[in-house]
Length: 392
Ligand SMILES: *[C@@H]1O[C@H](CO)[C@@H](O)[C@H](O)[C@H]1NC(C)=O
Ligand SMILES: *[C@@H]1O[C@H](CO)[C@@H](O)[C@H](O)[C@H]1NC(C)=O
Ligand SMILES: *[C@@H]1O[C@H](CO)[C@@H](O)[C@H](O)[C@H]1NC(C)=O
Picture 1 (spheres, protein in one colour):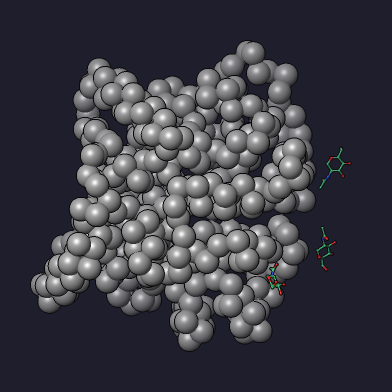
Picture 2 (picture 1 turned 135 degrees about the vertical axis):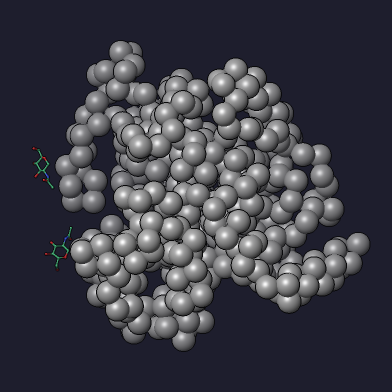
């Protein structure tokens, strides 16, 4: 029932959105969702090549973590849509990357919230701004998203509200083909300090409950998982360990820059990438998600020699899903000649990564389609024929 409600609100939202966007010069086509394709008839997700993970949706084109950004990513061929899950003051899980709303919404222009600006300590740094944890869902929904980077398309600023974790899930489930979700337990130490649920549960508990409510379960590549693929990610290892008794969904341990300590266990980069730590964490996670510049560090914007991080993870049976791939010149190292396809080629074929977080799902998808050998495409066709026979 709840799911139907979410579904209906998504339909209404989609229609509104289509109207909005067709008015706004029609420079970018919107793709109507949801579909009415029954689960059993959906095209399965590909599992034979590196995963295309739509980082905060197709946020290179549309404001991050909004419904249109996710819908666009699905239309462009994402295997997974990715999101950061935090909680509002009234305990509702929402999609938002930063703990503050300043960089990606119009909150600073809203007089009614002027007194909400404050300073909190976030991961040992005093941070000033408007915090998600100080807004109720109702208040948050009155805000409008904006593009984070000023060199990206600003025409969609002010149009779309933030969305809840449940709305995010509905967008994936309503897609015409099988689309996975890749939600992150975001800033759990900070959120759990500021948001209290009456039943004493934590962000991690609410997060898993939500996934279970929508039927997400099963180990990597199990039948249940293939129906509704999901990777759970976090920079906080203790959150991943904590939920290991609650869900067998595959988990991904995110690894930050070399200078940043883990927010929960206060460990250094060297500690969490040591052999002994990898040996410990591999029992809880099926992949690591490192920042790509720690895997192959750059110097003067040229790549240096690759570290052995990928080889070490692979040797222990863990996949590697680095972040974040971005098309713009300002993000591309000079080795790639300002060509994002050369960067994809390097990471997929030279480094052998198993998934990529990209701001430009469409580019990664086209790169992968155009470079797939016909042999691989044939194998994929056979695999999808076999799996559709299994389902009937
Ligand atoms: C943050 O600011 C408060 C109040 O000024 C101060 O007591 C605290 O030490 C600061 N914390 C950090 C990490 O700078
Ligand atoms: C999970 O449950 C087992 C068995 O009850 C227990 O030994 C283990 O410590 C639990 N792990 C976590 C992370 O709670
Ligand atoms: C984290 O560990 C470092 C090194 O042991 C220590 O100096 C620092 O106080 C710790 N920080 C916290 C918040 O525990």
